[in-house]
Image 1 (tube, helix red, strand yellow):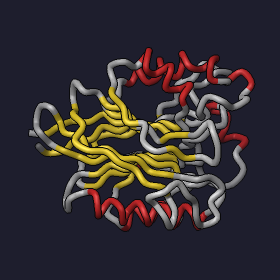
Image 2 (spheres, helix red, strand yellow; image 1 turned 30 degrees about the vertical axis):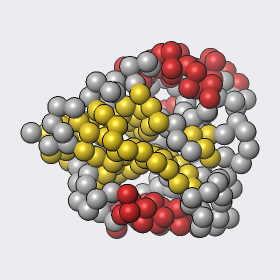
Image 3 (cartoon, one colour; image 1 turned 135 degrees about the vertical axis):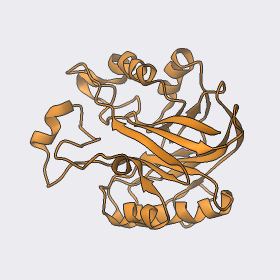
Length: 268
């Protein structure tokens, strides 16, 4: 018997930025409505901050969550939070580590611009008993060395915390496109890019970052190819579908990134 998982990764652009019309109070309702419309069972959030949590506690009360350890260089910190529906999954274990040479303490390495971290939960399907581990992260936006070393650290840590052969999902904003070294670290470790694995292609407008410009972003983007930098990477799970969710009410958008939604199955 298989367990189905509807899983979303979503960089929500925090809550403290001066984004003009798209400041958090103006787009919070649209952000929540987008999540509710697609009704994910599990969500990995990036750039998650306390004002976001205040809204989600009220509006997404059907979820339990692990905020995990914090990242960022100063307050207000960011969290790579994970939400899940307790009606479908129970928490078995959770943890986190920083992306540095000293991962057990709040620290940074490899010329990273910001202190970065990864958080994880191990969940069990209430119906089938199937278990999987979900790790959520946000790699550095400036230092390729930090992205490469951070992704390699994640792969090593997963070998420590995840039993051999256990289904694992890694979600996050990798701040790099397919084929780059950090991306390839996951592929070489046996992870599947669920977007490509389910028949999608990196066409010109396959951006996941859009800078609050929506479908117009690809027309003004600098550089070749789409800016697809948000991923659902799966190992020992079957990917049934994966879509970039392009909701918006211009000039308002749920975030400056589009969420990515994948349908996965794991054997019980």
